[in-house]
Length: 132
Image (tube, rainbow, N blue to C red):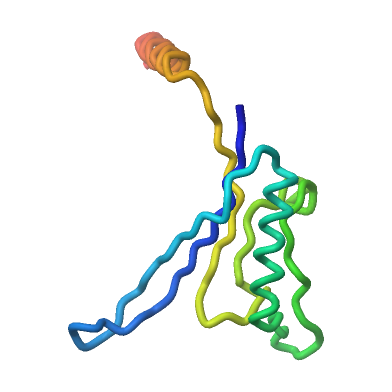
């Protein structure tokens, strides 16, 4: 069984409260867990719309245009694959970095997984005895 986890991770700098200086921080937030990829895209895209309402689209250095709006989708990724990762890089002008992601969660019976892993280790050991 599969489910789909939508998260966003923020990376930013902050001033240390008890010492002089600054530190890098990371904050990761779960948006939700969904039964299918399309629902995860829908909710993830609501997140993107929210961010776009707060921050401007990136303007290219030559001044000839702005970045396109990024969206999660089933087939707009590299070579027509799923688009399940969106960052602010060349997309939104934010004072922080962010990484919005849809992760596939796979559920299985733990005994089946242990058996599969154990069998793989055994066959690897046999393979290395013969070929090394």
